[in-house]
Length: 398
Image (cartoon, rainbow, N blue to C red):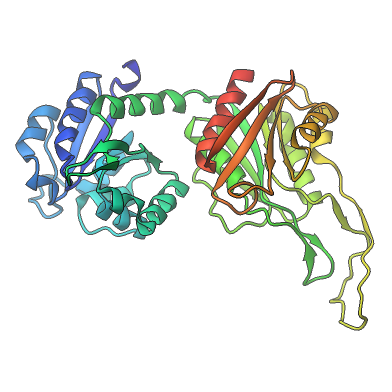
């Protein structure tokens, strides 16, 4: 448990029956060397007393924003700045909904808005509440913002049914926290370049050739690499996504501008993950003015764009180079050909014609292929989860 020594954990406890398990979580965290500061919602005090947490944590417990001020220190800001992590056990459907909407109507939700620390939350609730599309939408939103969810377990619930929604055991929650801190140090000192989204190749000032890439996979990888302590540069084509916090983001539009940005950064980076869907062709003669609709047909003459990944493979020295292969047929054959032709260390192959995989989805189905021919197939999972799996494999290569 050395990873938790002297870590400052703000433990948020909400009003669910599983709140009693948070007492053991606080105890285990403290025994592992962490400094624990508890914030209880009003609902939580109906299940566990403030005194219990005060004795277990050895620190004052915060239950309200309206207590007497004993020093000139705004408490929710002080706790937000103090935290190395904010851990919410249990996270009720109500808390998750409020957090997803950015509400700040009590000490816990206000602290969540004010903190820059990583946030880990463990949902616990009735199965129907957990699987409700609204709850799932809120969870997806928080995860996309970089929150870290401890998935609920399945089993007998307080409401008398068996199903998903049970809070994991305290020992497993503390193990997750320990593993999180271990991972945040795993890529410290490394500089990672990630490309994401598609490119726009102009036809005239108002039209372009593009593709359906949303950038979700690349953004997830950049966010996860940052969580693991790396210095991250994200070169992104047009995307509606918000760049991950703490990641230096370079916005581009065309394949040529992506090439320019990537080559400028390449000599100083340790790892490159090319998740962008770069257009293979561009319009040869781009019109300076909007092309007027006159004829029944419009003929565009296309020419090849530079192959950025191949060029990086030719220039590679110390870098670990990872590519993506999005195909609709002969997935393994094309991916293996690409890994050799472009001098890659690893390639992530996915069949974009499969449901739940490819462009504009929150999930993906991937095969990880290394230069020595090893193939590992991963089942359908969220792109956030797969980002972690990909980085685990990259670090094994190094």
